[in-house]
Image 1: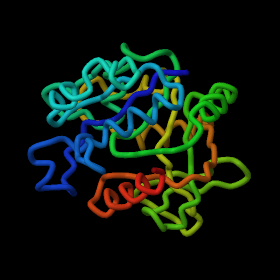
Image 2: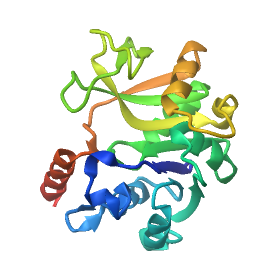
Image 3: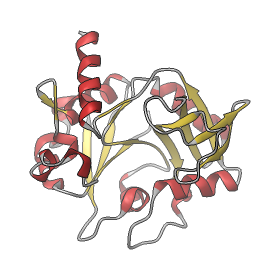
Image 4: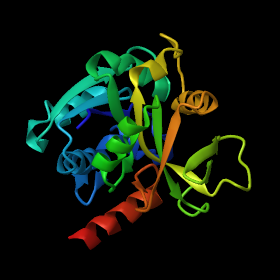
Length: 232
């Protein structure tokens, strides 16, 4: 399996005051830091290597996960440095630790789907980028993708259209050259990388049917905890 980059550098302002002292990925869900649940999921999917892109309170993330052995993984770290780099900037920083192709998930998302299928779809497409999408209908979050006939027609987090029934599910994949245009300094958003790939005809889409879970809000944490209880 390809390595996975986890974007875990955000400030998590929606979870304050909890995140004034701990990073979002260490917020507890069912008595454990969220990152523990996420890493176990990746290991169960056959993932062997993870690169954690850290920022805010990143040293706490590293102290918790260590080398990843306790989760059956090999974990390394790519810190933002003195200034926050944004999601695409963080991935640009992490490229030396990743393979030519790699998977990406957000540090606050729990995505119980078939990662091996997603990887296969991406590699077989020959595209530079890959996005999983979910028919959201505005239910779990604001929809931002037009997806028809197996293809992504539009993707925009700011300028939404009535035809956007789908949402960026959160599991992506890239060839490292997708970040050639990302700046070496300053903040750069992954949404801009996706949009450029779409414009260039280099973005493969895959619809998934399992809903996503997230801990970006207190209601999201409650939702995720209920899911975990149902699984047990």
